[in-house]
Length: 154
Image (cartoon, rainbow, N blue to C red; front, top):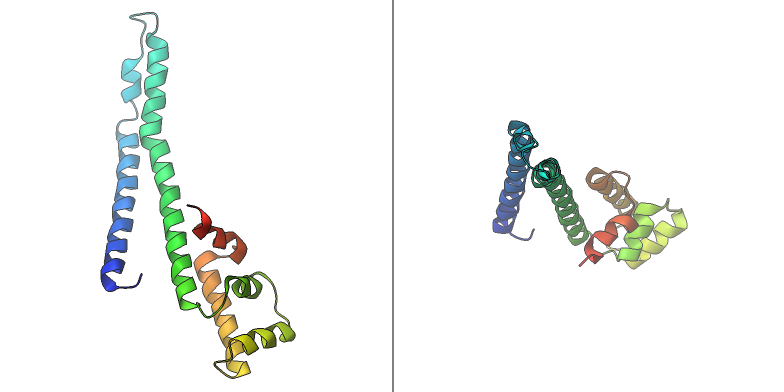
């Protein structure tokens, strides 16, 4: 997020998505017996119609909430990835993959430092460790390579 307005808008969107998920969960719990209202044998196809009604109810509530949860998480992950990349824009995607996904030798750190030498080597090394901690706090054990694909799905 690049401005407070965008940040507030993002927070409101996340809150609304959470409310929608909770509402769908509540509908599923509250009206779980509604599909049973359509059961019976008043006509030959009623049983299959009742099964179809139950499937539609499940799709409208449980499956929609599950899909929305997944999409909300994907949006949060992508927003975190974008913010992380903005904060660490001095590193290329390849350099970040190297820093995050594999242990760095001193030689690797020196090469990266040479490419981004805005601080002393010890300070630079500490900043790499901080970058890794930040990554883990946002994405757990997920690799940079796997998270980098978030931005490649259009």
